[in-house]
Length: 185
Image 1 (cartoon, rainbow, N blue to C red):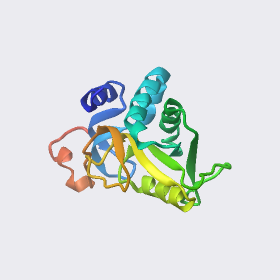
Image 2 (cartoon, rainbow, N blue to C red):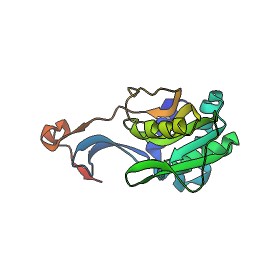
Image 3 (cartoon, rainbow, N blue to C red):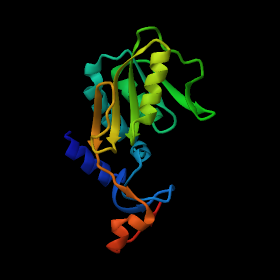
């Protein structure tokens, strides 16, 4: 599928919605993305994540890692499609950490998988874990790049959908000025 076809599919399934939304931060935005909705349909999720795995195959990873909670299901499905071991990290006391006995071997090539990338901060945190444990980041894959393709990551990067999402403070929102109805999330 093309990026446009994935976007249409994600829109049809309610994963991506365009409109005027109030975020929990209080900011207004023009898109709402909820990748968890993809996993309501196991067969569809498997197929979509298989497509991402095919894009990431060229990274020659030896393991897949993602972050709890949003990255766990896509990370697992990509690892399954690539027939690679899978681990995930999670936050403890505000810091991303590898727990549950998971480990990375020296020089092991790790594919980092995320559901959504907004700033790239969590990906960079995971890359630091990989580096600190002696591994190498082989590449990064995600379902939705919400930076409009503007994120700069220090490893090969593949995504299924790229969106340029804008957000505004309440008083600076052009959608409010246009009178567009606000949807609370």
